[in-house]
Image (cartoon, rainbow, N blue to C red):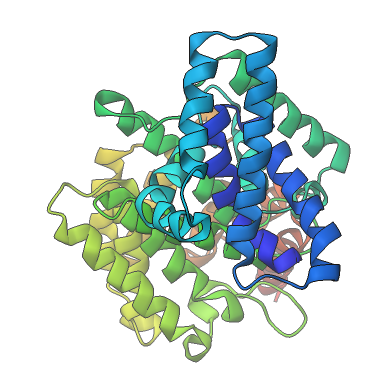
Length: 419
């Protein structure tokens, strides 16, 4: 039952939300259908098409809800919605009609649900929680565990998010024209936030949370199927597939982090790399200027194509980061460019870039700034300064594995300086 719900819940909520025009109500009605299944299936057996059964049950509950609403206030919009919903159920063979509806309308319904759950009217935390709940099929407890938050906090975020959408009268529709770009960017941001939290956990004892990477990949693949002509959707999917291919090599047997240059590339998942490169090719074939996700995917592809760390095309990576700085400038991108420059032109050239970032307000609590600077200083033989930077980076790190890695580098450079 849990597996069926994880697979089908987003589609069911999407279909019902189109009928009732309220995500919170749609989720409640879908949950009611699940409760009905828990009551009937043990006695009657699991149906051949569990998803169709649950959708049918949820639609019937939606009709009851709409009839009740019409009785309470018979305004024209309520009547129109009721009639539209009834038409969907007055066919001779409902299951066949449902299968047809799935083929013709389910894509639009899921897209509506994604764009609504990721609406910019919500905070980033609320968008992430609501998306994982509605589209990932995760329970509140699972989301709370993944982000190391209390279950009550996550539950409040989800409740507030649904209330905010309702009070703001956010329409359950696909954005069109000029509104599409910003809304799509919000959707992609949410999916990438989920992936990044799984790929490099910001806090806790684990370096990674692979379950979150899996959920982000599932959302990304769904979105790529629903919006195949959007290059940034394909670009984000490519980026996540390639990054996820390194999962097995990113930690050692004790769970300690293994940095990119030290990873056993034989442990990289070649299937995920092929999938990522294919998605990148689809993005590039759309013949539009590369966006941030497509450019980052191209950078990841440079690493994926290198059989050994020393084979990496750092000149191309440096150039791609320079382009990314033009498309989506940020101090973090510039810091990453500095790393590429250090590998291409040497640590001295990179240190000048990093030193120019030291006064950036947004990087003051960013542990990777002193970490990168420590690495460059170590390569330049300035070990006392490198030790101080690694120590400062460790103090800023929230993840325990990351903190231990940085403290180990600080100890190593200190011992080297003393020796």
